[in-house]
Image 1 (spheres, protein in one colour):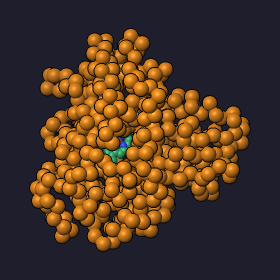
Image 2 (cartoon, helix red, strand yellow):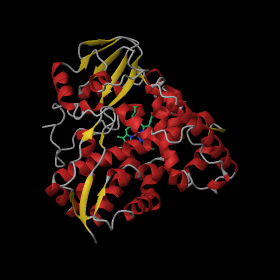
Image 3 (tube, protein in one colour):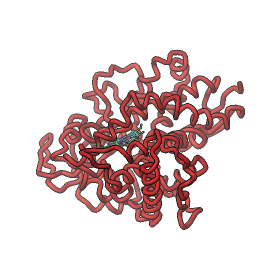
Length: 419
Ligand code: HEM
């Protein structure tokens, strides 16, 4: 399918608008929310407060005015996530992701959610995404690495992790690689609606126009790619609604990239901060899956998700009134000492009897979790295989993981021996 037959994605009216800088400011630069979360969790697993306000100076114009309850304990978080009838998504996300993406699965509940989720889930099953390791992930990772491998030094965030999952998704959709930068910018700009920036709705509209044309094109002349599959799949004899598919594609170009890049950056930070551990993993690759899961638990990129309380509900002796927004703090649950021994330690050897909540849980558990694992594995393997004697650059600032709802370091300056 010739992507060039499509009108290119239209740029923002103000092409030099730095969506990345605005988004960074929105995420804040909080260095470490965990000590405060721990103090609060010790006082009780549920509090009447909005977590965003504790960690960011920039108010969320849509969400902050609502009444919030913060859920911090593992069992309480899990209970909220598993009970999709009492704690729903639509009202929780309609003012935020619903505005950015439209009618996507994150903003659906019950039977409607199940209908669309089934189709998407099939497209991202482990056996499907495992095949993408060679066909989609490896070429992107190799291309990015080829630009700095002969230099002996790099910023692994701005030159590698920040790009690879976005570019994998563009390849998955068979989009024109020349437009990757513009896609990345608009994918990020979509999220600026919640801080009141007009570029948010503008990016949402322009991506929508592009994806509507893409769906029509692939439906008329389907190939063997994800968009063709989604455009032509039938449920009860009907194609899936275009507005849902467009919203999903908007979500995919953002959520699929933003989270995975952050998770990989955090994992690299953890390992390079402990050079002996990095070397152990380099020599014994069977430890890589453990390191990935532990980084996701220790400092997962999505610290908090949200639900809406449909009816007065008591959890751990606290009444959450109908109509409240529930801040489900996955990051706090992942450091709950009743579930994880010595939870503040990054320990790839810990017993894995309890699953971390970094991909959430229940009906909305991350559709892309298997893909994220394949992407992280391949990106790490390329580093472990090719960057000899990799170490932090002693002459540059060390990596610092920052942010609240979404976390990651901004730079990771490294040196390595030239091949
Ligand atoms: C390490 C990487 C990732 C993390 C930490 C992550 C995290 C999450 C979390 C916490 C949720 C639940 C949101 C809620 O509470 O409703 C979620 C949902 C979702 N994720 Fe991911 N995600 C990652 C990668 C991906 C990738 C690669 C994709 C691309 C396919 C993806 C697509 C989605 C979608 C479509 C949903 C909505 C599912 C639903 O509402 O039924 N994610 N993700």
